[in-house]
Image (cartoon, rainbow, N blue to C red; front, side, top):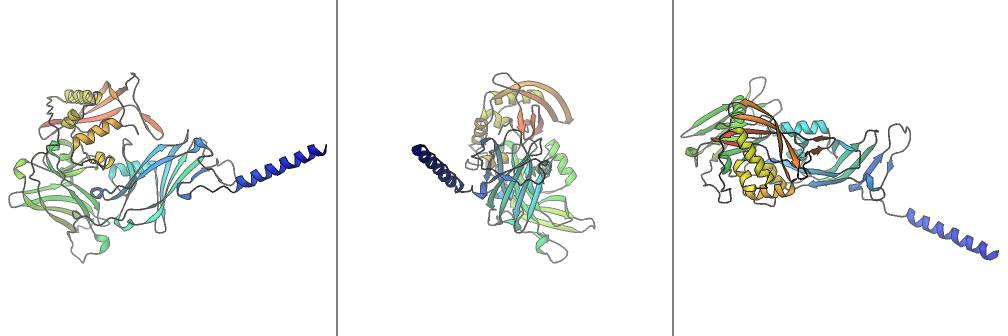
Length: 429
């Protein structure tokens, strides 16, 4: 009897020791903390903090990439790789001692279209990040992502972050002329990028990153001894749709630049941007530029694909997607490569073949299933709505946080006398 009693006491002491040891475990790092918030129906209950390792289904995986992208200004990219089942991204937040910026997913998608500062998500969900002004460089703070489900429960992911502190780029020259003395807040920041784009023709890209409050872009000029080209914003938008030479702005405002003929290669001149406000005041930004005179890069595609009608162009492009033919895709693609350069920063930025090849290797193996519709938007500009299929024949779809997209729109238009497809193959993160 005494032996049984002694054994019972020893067992109780052992359990107490184990409980004490568990209570002293180290708390998870606050920089990558995941918080699970109970439903709003649980009034008065404290927020429960759960370690992701203790509850695997609550785990959130987000990749933050601060690779410098000076031609795009100050930004970092993020990719949501994994979320708990049933949860979708609802809100993104930047918190520091100086600023608090909160954007919903809808606001981020709007920023993806208009290029405004803050969190952004591209229209097709391929690219996402946070754009901030020069005044926030070096800011130490916390980036927060909130996910919710249909029950009103919330999961929060946080990470401590220091925004990149980059030196001012040479191509972001100050050339502001105003009627009164220039104040710091009146600074205009315009990025000029002359990365060779021989497949797209001769062109200069520009991004207006900062303008004085109340001012908007009104007119763009190229001045040289041989040529004087002046385009309003409206004319530039028309060029963005029809591919004509001169200044252009794409329909959604994501891409803008200046396209010029071979006869202007090597020309020295001045790029001028005029900004106006509601009172009629004008501020001018100027920069001396020498247009590229270099020959076509030998790294560019040697496969010349010539098509004579829009649907044929699209179908050949779709065949190249199905066969993973990067060279043919480069020959037919007429859109921007900036997104691919951001995605693969270690690849030679001028090697389009390598960029597209890496993109294809990363993306899904799909082929064209059906062309649902064709619309003639304007002369030499057509849009097609298409459906892709997976290798097993099932319909391909892309998940964009809370919904699945399984129809895709492609634009075919005339660029420098040749029909080009303006969108990249589909991508599934």
